[in-house]
Length: 542
Figure 1 (cartoon, rainbow, N blue to C red):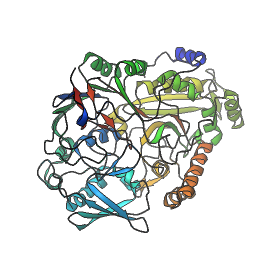
Figure 2: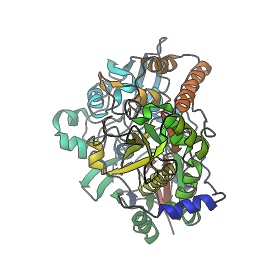
Figure 3: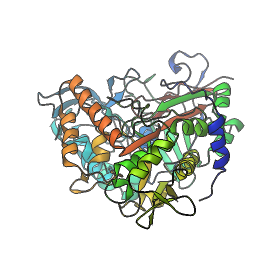
């Protein structure tokens, strides 16, 4: 891979004293609400430049949820105050065993193809969720059943206090039953039919998606800033992989909103534009060690690797205060029941060398890499460039250089989006370390990333290849716990155990940073998944 001058970056790590971090309290909205703004201009075209282009508009990747949120509506919404708000469901109740939830539905909602939203529509969507969302089994949903035209029951295999967060998180929107039954798989992928404030006019692959306003829209969630059709007439969603090019589009006026501006420009963005920031729930960008085979089956080697890298200063130097450091490799700071372990594993090369010596890796080759029984201490680290941007890749290069100092050789293997999602370097015999994030609004992210099976097959989300039935049972026990305080204690114990074992360690939180032109108001991020809401956005007179 093309390498930046990471030697110079390491010098900056040694000399930098401190970097001012942005305030990571959620910034949920920019500007006033359109209903009371006398300068509001109705209509117009919002142009947004995004980074990744997903294969389909909806599915299990958070980048698909960004798009789905514009076209689909959901049973419930995640409010700014952290409370679940009504949307297509007006109210709901739970059974005593917490495994059945009864939802009462609105009766005035219509899909953009004229199909009616009702209990039959909810039931018709469930098989599509099962098939199209790869991690669906970890929600513990079993099915929906119809009670009457405006009432459904959701059945769970396990109690799930965060099921409401999950249903609101952008993946579980509703498509027209007519379109599910009659449209081709390509149509359902590229131009699905929803009830949302926008409908798809055209998807030009490699370029962008054109959305037009749904003029019949009149069922916004309770936490929206207005009801009725969107203020803007059109939404142009452009795919621009390069951060510098996205920034250029914003400052030239070609775009109104830019996703993930370059970190070096973030201070300017805060001074000259409006900005939004959201730290994603779930699992942070972190390192997962292969504990099934290879050198990192030895806990001492895992711990030595962590002690050998100065994670806090790497994050400060590379990201210049735009994302927060995260020590916890299992949960990010915004996830319910998160445990702070940021002070664990301080940078300590002496301790790293001692652990490596104790593990028997005492010899060195001519390049300074450790050898044991004739084998070099070598670790392959593939990473998906659709998930790890150029700044993240720079952080990995610094990690690569720092562990070299204690004798560990890391081979960085960049993968394209196609290669990564096709499963390249995903088997335990193909890598020693993984790097990536997982957006999820619940502490049962532990089940997703550490359970060795999903639907009776190897769980591809478990990139450490961890397999311990006892610990997996403890995760499910914590999930089932009815007492909130005891549940928090159980999940805290699990997070501490995974950190002590150094099975996965955090580096930085996956953070959505957005810069917005000053003449566009009302844009907001939902506080469950950080998804941008263009529905309330409007232009003002200049």
